[in-house]
Amino acid sequence: MTRGALRACSLCALPRLGTRQLVSPSRWPPAHLSTSASRWSSTVSEAQPPFPIFRDVPPLRELRKKMFREGKEVGFVATMGALHDGHLDLVRHALQENTDVFVSIFVNPTQFAVHEDLDSYPKTWEDDLRKLRLVQDEHAASSGPNSDSKIRGVFAPTVKVMYPTLPPSSDIAGSGSFVTITPLGNQLEGSSRPIFFRGVATVCTKLFNIMQADRVYFGQKDIQQCVLIKRMVKDFHIPTEVRVIPTSREPDGLAMSSRNVYLGERRRQDAVVLSKALFAARDLYNSGELWGKTIRNAAYDVFNQASLVKRKDGQQGGSCQMEIDYIALSEPDSMGMIAKVNPKRGAILSAAVYVQPVDEPRSEEEVGQRVCCLDPNFQNIDLGSQQPIHQIDQKSSKAG
Image (tube, rainbow, N blue to C red; front, side, top):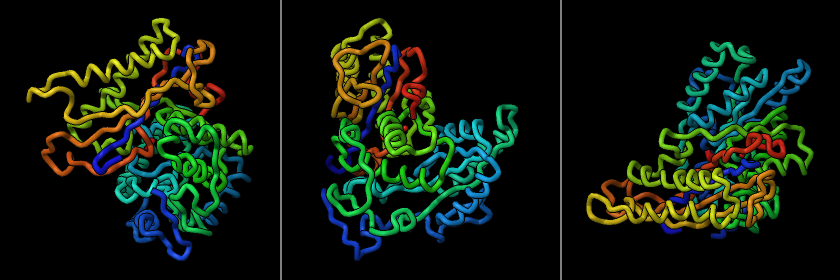
C-alpha cells in the first residue's frame, strides 16, 4: 500500500444455513519496535490502578497456582488496548462464565510488518483501565450469573518479557521462536500480510501458556483469526476452551474496531459500504441462493453502486477511493475457497478493501497515514444458521 492507504477487511460468516527487514539480535529493541518495547514499561502512570497490574510472568504464575488450588475458573481476554465496546463485551461474557477474569494489554510487534502502524497504534492506557472498572462495577451490580466474579488483574508486559531471547523479527525469514498455522494462516488476509497470523499464533500461544485460563474470549469480528486460534488450540492440545462472541457494531452497522479512529469522519461514512455489501450478500443467501459467484456478486454490486452515487460537488463516489482486494467465499473450518454453500455446513464470506486518502483533504487527519488494519474491520454476519457461529466446530477470533 502507498502512504495514506487504510486497509480494512470484512468477513461475513455464512454459518450453517447459516519490506523485509532483518533485525539484529545486538539491537534491543529494533528501531521500528522501540515504541512497543517501552509502551507498557514502568514509566506508565499507574496511580491507584483499579486492578493489580502484572508486568512480568512469575508474579502472575504464583497467583494462578493459588487459584488452581482454590478451584477458581478463569476467563481470559487478550487485547492490544484502545478498548472499545467490542472488547468490553468479551469481558462481560468472561465475567458471566467464570469466577475470575484476566485481561492482557500488549501491542504485539510480531504481527506488524515494518510498513504497518505499530508506532501509531492507539495508546489509551488510563482510559482502558477506567472502562474495565466500569464493566466490573456494572457486572457486580447485576443479577446475572456469577455476579460476584471480578477482574483479577491486567497483564501488561513489555516486549522483552514476551520475547525474552531474541528481539522479535518482522521479517518472514527472521530468527526467533514462532508458531505457524498453514495453510490457514497463508490464505486471504494472510496472503496480503504474510507475517500477521504467524505473529497472532505466536503471541496467543505465549499468552495461553502464561495465563492457563479455562476459557479464552475472542470476537467474531476477526473470524479468520478465530478459525486459526481454534485450529492452534486443537493441534497443540492447549487446555482451554475458545469462546467466540458475536460482533459488536456501530449503529450504522460497521464493526467496532480500535482502528476506526484512523478513518476520520468522511472516510468513516464511506467505509459503511463494507457492511452494506455483506448484508446484501446475506439477504441473497437467506433468499435461497447457494452459488458462491452469485452471492459474491451481490457484494460487488453494492460497491459498484456506491461508486456511482453523485456527491454534492458533482463528482461520483465517496470522499475517497476504495480498491477491492478480494471478495471470497470460504469453508468455515479451513478458510479454503468453495464454489457453492452447503446449507448444513455454512461458509464465510470475506472482503478486503483499501481505503485511500480523502480526494480533497480538509485536515491532516484526512490526508491519512499509511495504516494496515491488523485487527481488521471484519464484518461478520450471521446468515440464519441452525446454530450460532461460535458453536461451529466449538469455535472461537479486532483488532481490536
